Amino acid sequence: MATQRLLFFLLLSSLTLLAQSRSNTNHVFSPCADGKVQRSDGFTFGIVFAPRTSFFTNSSVQLSPCDKRLSLSSANSQLAVFRPKVDEISLLTINTSNFFPDSYGGYMVAFAGRKYAARSLPAFVANGTFIVTSFTLVHEFKKGRLENLYWKRDGCASCSGNSNFVCLNGQDCAIRTNNCKNRGGNVDCSLGIQLTFSGTDKHESVFNSWYEVKNLRQYSLYGLYSNLRSSLTDQYNKFF
Image (tube, rainbow, N blue to C red; front, top):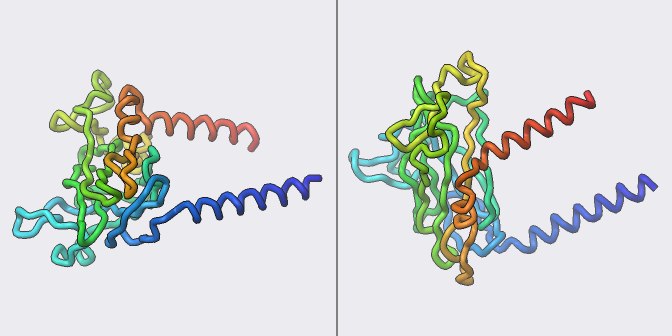
């Protein structure tokens, strides 16, 4: 009976994966390529960590990281690539136990596309003194084409009155770097990026995830995730 249940589970899992692959209409997997999406498609984008000046040419014009004029591949930079589902609230995490954002310039830019090259403004992540660990990134589409990427900030509302955080420039909640686990402290300073979508897909259906996040602004998605992760770990610790 146990063998039959296992076979049934494997069959069900295979059918689920097959259905997901068939429902995806976006077969563009490079963050430096263009495509149009509909709800529940996978969508590939990248985040580059580098010094702020590395994202500009002539010290004034910001280019996409896909633009070879920036020469990011030969600069002090690191790339992370993600493929979330369109119009689903997602939490992206970047483990900083062996990755130090301040070692790569301390800023990050989200980007996707080449001809329709969308990129966010450079966002401060870390320096030798502070690190910002919580971000919200909005993907703005028009008829399925990505038009804009921007960081949505709450003006330090999420850490107001909390002495463990420092409000930087009136917009970012930061932790002192020496409190992080990899810097002698005991705080998990992994980066958490809440990902949402706004605008319309290629069928002109309206994306809802950004409005859902706005209605949940009193909660921290990363905090909820951390609590869930801790509770699961505690459960496992009971067995081992």
